[in-house]
Length: 156
Image (cartoon, rainbow, N blue to C red):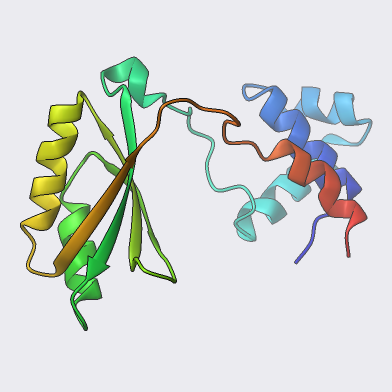
């Protein structure tokens, strides 16, 4: 599925003004409020818009260390590993991957020694055979979606 030019403008405007109301959004876009409501509802139903909650910076709540932990999982034990990872609150995301690692985890920690404790906890699961950790030193291009949204209507 794709988005059209109005969807693109709607999403970019909502991201630039996260607390904007539908009436003001309609005014800025030059369309009827009902059109905006229908578009937002459609984008939510298609799971293009996944939430309206605030984005939280982990470092601002005491977790300044960001690391990516690659895991090799014992054959046939993927579900068990994922369930074990769900129990670790410092694991923010987990992706199934191809290549050397089976899973890639985004994890935060209070310190490098805390990160080491998190890795030890991960390795305590019999489903996890090996980990490899990369600590983030700086954020060169923070998460962004606006360039993709702006380009999406132009691409087939």
